[in-house]
Length: 235
Image 1 (cartoon, one colour):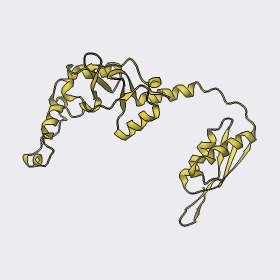
Image 2 (cartoon, rainbow, N blue to C red):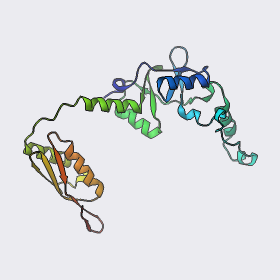
Image 3 (cartoon, rainbow, N blue to C red):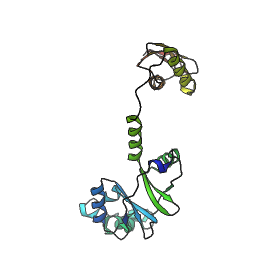
Image 4 (cartoon, one colour):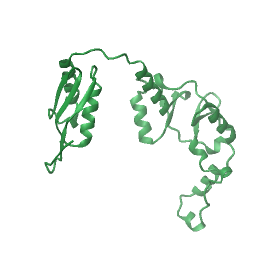
C-alpha cells in the first residue's frame, strides 16, 4: 500500500506570517494536532504542532530562565531559542523548520519506519516541493477500521484445511519452535498443545490461529520451558 492511498488530502495549512492564535484556532476548528506551514506556491517550509504550545508565556508554562552559570554549560543560544519559542507571536518563529517529508509514491511501510525512527506523529506528503497531503497516525487507524468494516463473514472451512493453514502460519515464525506446537481442529475449534520457550510465544501462537479463516475458537494449552534451565512452566 502506498502513502498516496492513505494520506489525508486536501491539507489544512497555515502561513508562516499567521499568528500563534490563528494557528491554535485552526487546529481546534479542524480537530487536528499539527499544521504544515506553507509559503506561496504551496512549498512546505515547516510544521507547528500541539507540542509547540506547551511552553508558552500566555499560560505561564515557559519555565524558569537559566542562571548565568547554568547557561555557560548550555548549547550556545539555547536560552534565547527557548525564549523565542515561548514568547513569539508568529508561526514562523515557533514552527519546526528541519522538516521530515515523504513522497506520495513511498510505501506505507517506509512511512511507518520513518515515523518510528524519528519519533514523529505525522509526515507531510510531497510531490517534488509541493505539499499534496499529510499522513498521520490517525490515517493508519482509519484504514485499519475500514479494512475490518469491509471484511466479509468467514466462510465455512473444513477442519483439515484449517489445521494445515494454522501449521503453515506457525512454520513461518521463528518463535514457534518449528514443529514444537501441535495443532488439532474439531468443528472449527483449534487446540494448541506442545512447548514454547517463553510466555509471549503462547500468546503469539493463539493469535496466529485466531487469524486463520474459519477458526471459531482457540484452546491454548501450551507449556513453556526456560531455555537455560530446562524448567517447564505450566499454563
